[in-house]
Amino acid sequence: MMRISASFRGVQYLLLAVLLSPAANRLWAQKKIPTLCSKCIDERDGRIYIMTPDSCPDYASGYNKAYDFILTKINDKFRPFSFTTRANNNVFPGPPIAQQKYIDSFHLVEAGSGNKVYQIYLTEEPGLREYSGYPVSLPYGLAYNFQLHRVPKNKADAVIKNIVSMQKIGLFDKQVNTDLKPVPYRVFTDQRAKYLQSYDVSDPLIFNGINMDMEDSDEEADKFSMKEKLIKLWVQCYISVDSNWNSVDMPERMITPIALQTDKSLYVFSQTVVPASVKGGGSIDQFQGKIFDLSSASDYERLYNRVLQTFKEDLNATFQSLPLSTQPVSGLAPNQIRFQRKFDKSEVLKGFTGPYYELSTYTMIVWNGPDESHLGNNRIYLETDYLKKNYQNNQVFLSESTSLQIAVGKTGPYPEPKPEQYSAYEKAVRAAILEAVKKTTSRLGGQFINNIGKIK
Amino acid sequence: MQTNSIRNFLGIFYLGVTALLGAYILLFQETRFLPIARDDASSSFQIIIPTFIAQLTIIFKWFANPPQSAGEEINLPKWVVIAPPILTLIILLSSISLIVIDNGTSLRGGEIFKNIVTFSVSILGATTIFIIARVFQEPKKQATAP
Image 1 (cartoon, chains in turn green, orange):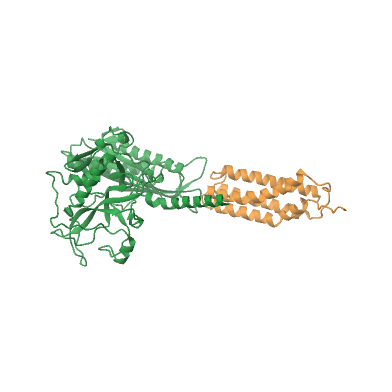
Image 2 (cartoon, rainbow over the protein chains, first blue to last red; image 1 turned 180 degrees about the vertical axis):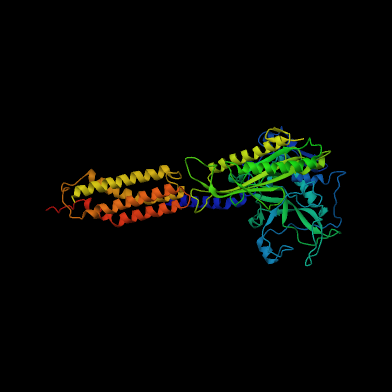
């Protein structure tokens, strides 16, 4: 009897652990946290610069994403000869309040909307490209993602020392947002400064007040389970200031994570750009990538417009023909193309099974961007036009999102399709898009190489 | 109607309907031969099988070990025995034909099939099940003198 009772207690603990673990797991949607080599971490003038060379074992294979280490980006601002501004009034605001009980007791509300505030959220470190200091809006289908990297033990103290020294700086890097409009019930400022602070995340009330959910890739389903006790989270905070660096509002409830200390290790955060995960609405991205290379164009603007016009015509033709057999939807935003097929027999799934009827919407966004691998590469996306001479947005990209529901009968409910049905549509959509690219390339006298139309 | 004839008729009916309908649903769901969704097919299967299998168990248990007094006459009108299974069979075949001919264009095939199956099982449950209970019952054991 006692043995049974003990096992039951064991099961109870196990269940409790499983129930409590998701909150802690949200942050680390990584199968494995890679460990940086000592040579990845360069110490110069008391500042830490992190890079991931190919020779580093944990990054040699499988980690081909370009990482932007947030600590490095902040340190970059304080390099000799690097332009940044710093407050001289020694203002050290605290981090935005994370515990709900304090939010409630202080009656904190969102400035502007007046809505009650809840959790604080992660936001990306603004890139070099946008001068306003506010986060860059990524094109449709892309999202920012944070990842953790373990710092080797012999470098942990140096990293912490660097962060703590920057905490003592107070406000820095004040920037002006020209997009803001004054509102009558609020002290208006168009300036925002940054500062570093830390959270004691060993307190679950603080940890739970920080929404760690970020857009993530397919790894969402297989989350890394961190079996370490969380201690401290260092973050970059943002606050509205006036021209004299005096804060005029409460700290913004968006923070950028820099480093995390646990009872066993120290971790630093990197940010990168990943394809946005599918979220609700039954939509799925079926195609993403470069479709035209116009780098050899003599008159880029004219060619770009001509390519777009021709491509839209060809896309209309391929999406209206079998097997997709859709109808175009008009009245959309520029560079957005949409096709639909409503309650008609699916030609894609035609076969022994069925008959299937579909309710499908294909939405495509076409945009131009810089050369190189545009998708999934934060550094290039943010910095290519900054670094490159004679820079031009001369590549054309397309992102397609499909909303699909399939029913066996024409009437009745239209449930979500099965994976094999999705993949059948993915093949058809990909074939239709590439066929349109090929046709456009051919019509404009270009070459269709590696699924990209190179047109002069 | 002779008791043995009733037993044979009901035995063949239940075995045939259970096996053929079960296999038909399993094999041809989401095809042009039974254009209903997998969920509806699964629900229909779950309605039919437990009820019909229970009847089959009673029937085959009796056939496996028939009592000596098996040849007794039972005074029942013929329609009481034959009509419910035949009507049920007609209803089932008609509805399957209708769904197949419609091929998902205008009818809500899954819903119709599910309702028809429930209806058929209910009819048999209200009628033939009592006949089965009577003709396949085990003879009462006679008390033996101490």
